[in-house]
Length: 230
Image (cartoon, rainbow, N blue to C red):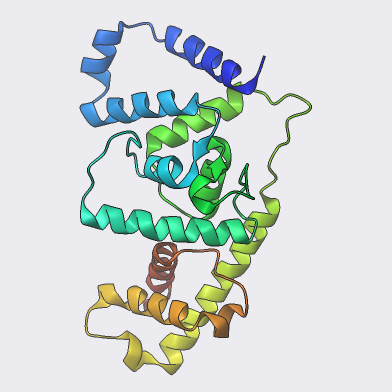
């Protein structure tokens, strides 16, 4: 049985195990958005592969690739993530099925995209995480199906996190006037911007494994840890 059929069978048995009726399930347990996302991911996880740009990226935001109308800020975030995904593909941090085709035609497996999102500290809807976890645990790979190893990705990501924190410390000590604009919430954003603008100084010829949003989150956590105790 191929992987897609095994996923469909697993999802069928999963849904049969729910003892209450579908109507009661929809009304009582799930709010409208939760149910929409669950149905969306159940539909798409049964597809053999996703177009990274037109399908995978929107799905990471909980957006149906077949019909959507999004706000400008979400559109900008999707564009930023698409750029980051292309950089990660070039560094072999994101597995593409048809790497020799044009970027717009790149195809990816749902599980590979999810693993990459976790490594890159990309926040995805909990419904996606739950369903992928269910698929990973339920649908066992056959002997001839390669399993993507993520240890090397994790190692590189950890190294780049350390570089970002080292760069943040250096900027806090040596260039406070460029960072502190009077608003505490902008400090991490300013540090991240300076790191990206001067990335060659910190990362050499390599592209950072973290996108700018992930850098900001990491630096914010770091700043909270080093704040003096009153």
